[in-house]
Amino acid sequence: MKITLNGVEREISGNLLDQALRELGYCDGAIATAVNGEFIPKTQRLDIVLSEGDRIEVVAPMQGG
Amino acid sequence: MLVYDTKLSSRLLLGTSRYPSPAVLTEAVKASGTDVVTVSLRRESSNERSGQGFFSIIRSLGVRVLPNTAGCHSVKEAVTTAHMAREVFGTTWVKLEVIGDRTMLQPDVFGLVEAARILCDDGFQVFPYTTEDLVVADKLLDAGCRVLMPWGAPIGSGQGLNNIPGLRAMRARFAEVPLIVDAGIGVPSHAARALELGMDGVLINTAVARAGDPVGMARAFADAVKAGHAAFIAQPMLPSDVAIPSTPEIGLAHLV
Image 1 (tube, rainbow over the protein chains, first blue to last red):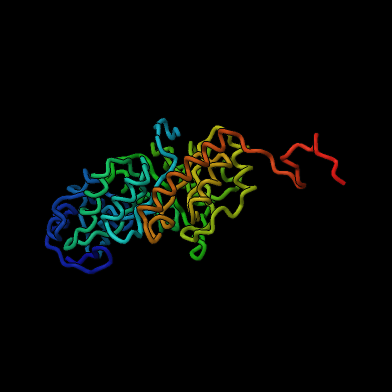
Image 2 (image 1 turned 180 degrees about the vertical axis):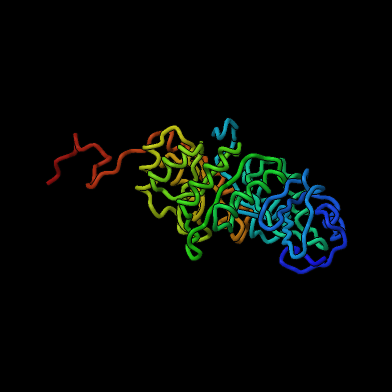
C-alpha cells in the first residue's frame, strides 16, 4: 500500500499505523504522529487502520524560539 | 516570577534555535541562568533521527521546556501541534503562535483567541504570542490564558520595543497578569527597558543565538533583565519636558 510519510511517498506492507511506523524505521523515541492532519496519540497507534494514500506525519523535538 | 503556579527564578526565557552548534546552545543556556527554554516540533527523518539527539541535549540541561506552535497559520494546525507537543514533551505548557502575516510574522489574533480557548478548555496552559492590543488581551484572558506574551517587534528583527506606550498601557490594564515580551528584542538594553516598564520577563532567541559570542550575550541578557527588574522595583523617576537642576540653586554665589 502506498502512503505519504512526511511528504514523501512510501510503500508499506502492514496496515496499522503502529506497524507502518516500525516498518519505516520509527521503532522508539520521542515522536508524535498525525494521519491526514489529525493527531493520533501514541496509545491509539495500534488501533488506526491506514488506507491507500493516507498522509502520515511524524514529528520530533527540534530547536525553536 | 510566577507563571501558571510555577515559580521561575529567572525572568529570562531562552529560545534554542539558530545557535552555531549544540555545544554553544548548551553553554548559552547555562550562562543565561534561564529556567525555561522554547522548543518546537518538526518532521523527523527515520535515518537521521536528529530530533532524538536534540531532545537528549535539552533534557540534560535540567530546565523546563515551553513547546511552541511556530509556523502554524491556522487554528487547526496550532491545536494539532499543541497536542503533539503535549505528548512528546510531557508538558501542558504551550507557546501558542498562530501566524497571520508571513512577512512580519504578525499573530493572527482572531485565530489566536479561538485556538487559545480550545486549548485552555482542554487543559493546556497557554502562553499566547500576541500583540499589545488590549481588547485581544482581554479576550485571551477570558479564554483562559493566565500569561500574555506581547511582541516587542517582529520575530527575529532585533528592533527592540516598537510600541512602548502600548506595552505600558497593557501593564497598567492587566496589573496582575504575567507579561512576557516575546520577539523582536535585539540587545540587552531592549530587555532592560522591557523590565523597567514592569514587564515580568522576556523571551530571547535570535539576539543571543546570532551574536558573535552567544554565551557572552546570554550572560549580558541575564544581567540586563536583573537590572531592569531592579529598576522597576525601585520606581524610576518621572521624565520632564524641561531641565531641572540637580545642583541646588540656593546659596549660589553672586558673581556678576
